[in-house]
Image (cartoon, rainbow, N blue to C red; front, top):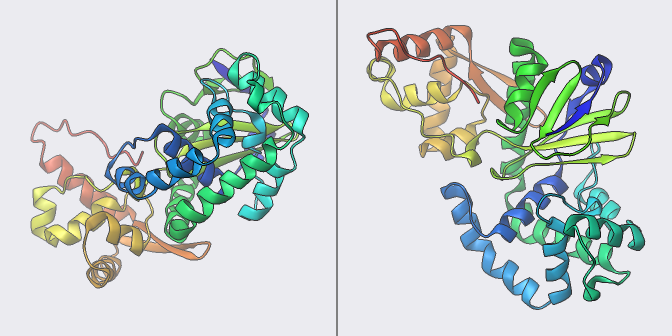
Length: 336
């Protein structure tokens, strides 16, 4: 397994970062794979996969670059610069474009685990990669970015809240279940590959959510900044299928109870509308009633207003879940 060695100060200074480029690269990986993990991704692919394939069919060199850069177990480093807080997409993609041609070719050899194909032995690879990422951003991500950004902000807020509840070990274990894990002794497992450990104490460590659900990677600026990109929870993860306990539905009404159940993790009004299929006005009324009853509260995250259950709301949902299990064997609610 691959793991990083870090001291307590590095973990304490770590932060969550939302990156338009990381979201774009995750979408590039999804387009390259050609299949999604839930209906939302299937619908998105249906709308954009034909255009992506046509784009690469018209540019076979870039098509070969994508296949080589994604590799099997290693992504060419110049394609995924470590996100920096507050950078715009234009600033991030400029770092892809600024990669040295020689370094790009060397990194492609690493991702291929073999020699570089003759058609990729050229100096314009960073420019081609940046151009493709710009196309993916403009055509397939930017039209949905405001909604996706709200989903990512909700994930960050939920995980930040979990730090206070479960500590950093609980958060690190939940980023990519089965992949990331706190091993103890200042060791953080980042994946299951047999890579040499890295000492990152003193560097900046950032965690970056993306909406694509079958993706994740790590990137770094050696000795300065290290990033773990992970799939977020929320709307695009198909989080809307949680059952409403019958007793809770009878007490609050099924629709309102459904909103309360979903708010184990912070969500915005627009997210709740998308998940539940209810109208914006209906969701707003449910939230107002639940707030007045002291069952949910709201807080601001960037430009979004996110709602989450209060302790009283948790008790009510847990009581309803327990009611469904007369033997008292109902499992506890897990936000992740």
